[in-house]
Amino acid sequence: MKRVPDRRSPSTAAGSRPPVLSRRQIRILAAAACGQTNREIAATLGIQRAAVSSTLLRADRILGTGSLAGMVRRACVCGILSGPTPETRPPVRLSRAWAAVLSGLANGSSTQQIAEGLAVSEDTVKPHPRKLFTTLGATSSSHAVALAWQYLLH
Image (cartoon, rainbow, N blue to C red; front, side, top):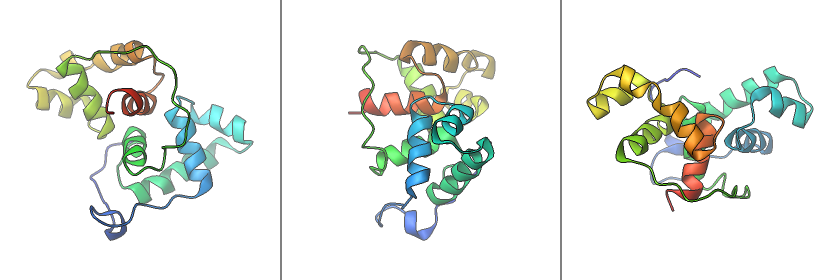
């Protein structure tokens, strides 16, 4: 998904009630947080891949993040994804730079935006997400954000 500006509706603004997602949206978002691809989610739920994509787009309109990793982060923060069983992982220590890259991914930032925030070149940042996924044992940025939420942010 492309990065778009945060477009929270009044119902999802800070200090108000948490966003409400349908059961299907939560199941699909939880599966994405576990590292499943849209194709794998569709096969598991017995639906078409296009239905997975459109469900995620509707969830993004509610959560207002602009990226799948951002949706996972927001769903974790709001308690929507508090139910999935944490994956067992060995403890991981991340450098400040890797933590900044992970934070940028969670916010839906591009590698260029992350590089600007770290005051380094984009070419320096580009290999970090892949190395970060390997270190965390994640298969995607949304999976990395979910793992970080489970183990690094608490």
